[in-house]
Length: 469
Image 1 (spheres, rainbow, N blue to C red):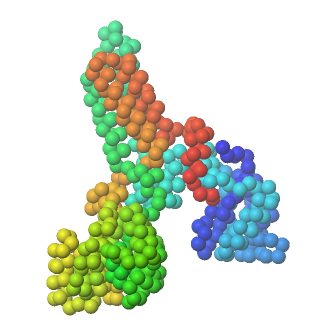
Image 2: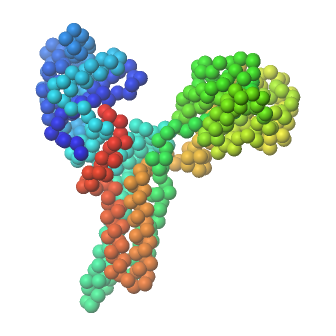
């Protein structure tokens, strides 16, 4: 585990940001900052109170640039130790040079998640809150972000503390009954305690049901755009992406490779991709290989946007192509709607619905008609896949969801099982066994927040973080 007597440093800003920051924490923070950073006239970097200090930083013997120093003295800092952040407007190589200079003066490179680990080890946050920091960083949609923020704000601690207290109350009643069974003292019956435990079990089950599994939502979901050659897929990708990601040409089979772009929606972020147009019967090895790659990518994607050129009059090829893919969620889209009059367009949409057995969204990459509706539909489909009913998710689930890691879920599940077995033992008048099971349930649920955890568990938790956080 980490050595808290070391002073550590790392580049803590994202790689594509304009402002870069190098973060330092540990007992020698002020000493190491003083040789690197020169404050503006009349200012000092002494360790007194949190403040912002403008100045200049020496990158090497020949280069000195403007910088801002944010100083957070111990113990009122994120880590509980003195923390300094050097903020500069430069490229990554300059930040790397600053870090190398600090490491050359005896600082150690911070490990993954070490700043947050120090905050936990110094008692600034509990273990669940430390884990929530990482979930906030890797969240790919607003529901995940809101759920992780609930833990950072102490919501999980509140829930588990309440349940732990209730478990201890029930355990005390059972043990009191065992200790004073021969005394003339009126105690709660096993049946009454069983009812209370059933209520606690329900609370634990609701906590588990109203949660997001963090580990299952770390990667951005994929949204594939499929259809026949020249169905308008590449034009649609470019409009969704907001830039010319894919080559657009009236010539069929222009797209051969799988082209991707990140897409930000109202509640989600996803990767949207365009691939080779599908062909019912490929007539050469190049088409066959392109189709195999396309079908494989589409089958593994979360949502498929199936494009059909509404300006055509024969869709036999499209019907055959539709049978090649079995997506988790499908959004049928009628493209090139700008080429038809309103009357003919309505007739064609009705015909497509009859042929394919479903409603089509009407779009035009040229006029951008229907693109906002398509974005909203993709967003809704992703929410439904991740959380069930998309409408419920967007109309209140943000207020109740809590992000649980595998460790949290295991602890809650173990508590549910032990409480359920304790209820059965009480009904069979096996109070001693019930007490043993409740102790196990209490230990499991208390373990979510506890401050004394095996080093191997801590290493596993913080190894998931990126360096600098």
